[in-house]
Length: 454
Image (cartoon, rainbow, N blue to C red; front, side, top):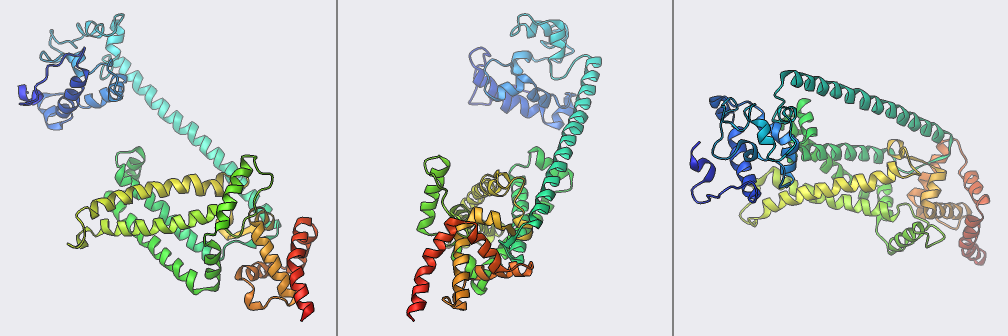
């Protein structure tokens, strides 16, 4: 190298490692590392491969990267202008001089210390022992942690099966139809794959992205997987829109998912309840405020990700009518919306379906669409009461069949398909719940009086 390889023409700085650590760090990053990681230069001058990586993985390298001004940099050990091969008698890292070099920072440094704390251990026997220890711990970690994972998976699946068996003996009602379960399955699969393949591009140097490449997830495979899953998600979304508007069940779902002012009051009361500032927990309808917020956030997120993803997939279709910043801003929105959506699923959705103490180890509703009557009443008592009221009015003749909601007929027909009598089940719940009985009598009284007058 010549002078301007390190100093450049117009940015020549004096480097004193005592009071100019920032400049020394800049030279290290922009000069030393650049040349010493170049395979052609390394081969030409016989430089040992991997020296830079070994330094960066050492305590010195890691501390310097985090901004430590006391940790040793390249110039601290190798000097500035008198950089010589290790074999040269005058080299600061020659075996005869390296201890003195270490003592500049470590006053009590010994010969053993100076030989062990370099880019790599100087002693061949010590290097061999290090390799054995590293391999031993690698397989120890794999076997111990792998064993723990298998052990806990065994417990997890046992508890899931136990919960499923317990639920099979309970009275269950449909929370989702089979159609909705399949829709959710397509959404779940496409979302997870989109998150994995999307972040694998952004964080291509991460350990898990490297692992995906090991299993054959090349860039071409990643692109096709990401785009296919995007098409699946958009197609599922379009089908869902049609389902909401063109089926009786879908219209019932949409009606119950519409935000209401009562959701705000229920959210307030629920927070006060968990803060122990309110005695009674609020009663929730078919979908509570948390489920509604998540649903509409999903709708919004799908539209945003679909629109920005289309621009990124086909950037050349953006015509002259579009502002210059459209493509780049679409890229930013796509990335940050992906982070927002992924964190929302992990922090919000998974809490309510997996980590909530009442649901743990997992809600099974997403698998078969069923929910036990006990859980249904626990989560959606307001909706249960509405179903009971509609059914009682329908059976007494005060409500026309056309005015009975899809949810009520789905509820009662599911009981009938299970060989149960809806009237008996509903009456049993009324007889064993004084609060429900009192509420129902108050609601039915105007209907009875109306019938008597006619």
